[in-house]
Length: 326
Ligand SMILES: Nc1nc2c(ncn2[C@@H]2O[C@H](COP(=O)(O)OP(=O)(O)O)[C@@H](O)[C@H]2O)c(=O)[nH]1
Ligand SMILES: [Mg+2]
Image (cartoon, rainbow, N blue to C red; front, side, top):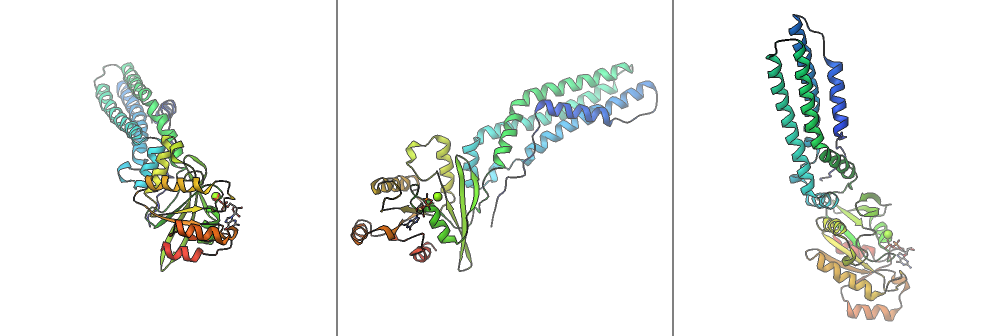
C-alpha cells in the first residue's frame, strides 16, 4: 500500500539566514596554513571562499532534492499541492533555487581562479569579499522563492496521510444527516483525523476489512456537504483531489429532515455531486430510518428504487451497505 508522507521537508532558510550561516562557518572553519605571506593569505581565503559558497550551494540543492518530485506525486496529492500552492509556482521557485545553486558553484570556481593570480597578500581578502558580495546578491534575488518554499514546506508537511491505492469510499451529504455515525458503524472504530486544506475539521478516516481486502472510508466534514457553486477555486481543487481517491461515494440523505435540511435540497446536492464526479459510482443511503413512518419509506422506494435504508446509530442495514460496497 502506498502511503505518502510529505512530512520530511527541509527547514528552508531565508537569504539572510543562509548568508549569515555561510559566512560564520567560513570564518570559523578556515585552518592555519604555512608558507610565504602570499601563500598563507591565498590558502586562508581559498578555504573561506570554498566553505561559504559550498554551504550556500549545498543548502539550495538540499531544498530542491527534498521537495517531493511533482512529476511522481500520485494524482490525489498533486491536486492538493495545486490547491495549496499552485504547482506552477512551486516549480518556478524550485527552478530558481536550482539555478541559484549553479551560479554559486560558478562563483566559487571563478573566484578561486582569481585568487591564484594575485600578487600581494592583501589582494586575497579582496577576492574573498568579492565572492561574498556576489553570493549575497544571488541570494537576495532568491529571497522571494526561499520564503515561498519555506511556507510551502510548512503547509505540505500538514497534508493528510491517506492510502492512495486502497479502495476508498467517500461519504458525502448535508451536515447532521449521520455521516460520522455511519463511518463509525462501517469501520467500528473511532476515526483518525487527518488535516486537510480548506476544512478546519480535517478528513476522518476509518478502515474495514473484507475477504483479505482493506477498505478505506473517508468522511469529509465541511467539503461535500453543501452546494459546490458556493466554493472558491482552491476549495474546488481540494474537492477535485477526492475524485482521485473515491471509488465510490456514499451519499447520505436524511428523509426525516431532523438534520435541518429539506430532502429536496439534499437531493439537489446529490445531483450536483454526480455532475462533478461523473466517473465515480454513487450509492445513496437513507439514514435515520428509525424516525421514518411506513408511508414515507414506501414513497421513497417508489421514487428512488436504488436507495438503501439504514439506521446508522443502531447499525441496522449497515451490513447490507457493506456487502453492496465490496
Ligand atoms: N435517530 C437517528 N439519529 C441518528 C442516526 N444516525 C445519526 N443520528 C444522529 O444525528 C446527529 C448527526 O449525526 P452525525 O453523524 O454527527 O452527522 P454528520 O454531521 O453528517 O456527520 C447525531 O445526533 C446522531 O446521533 C440514525 O440512524 N437515527
Ligand atoms: Mg460529521
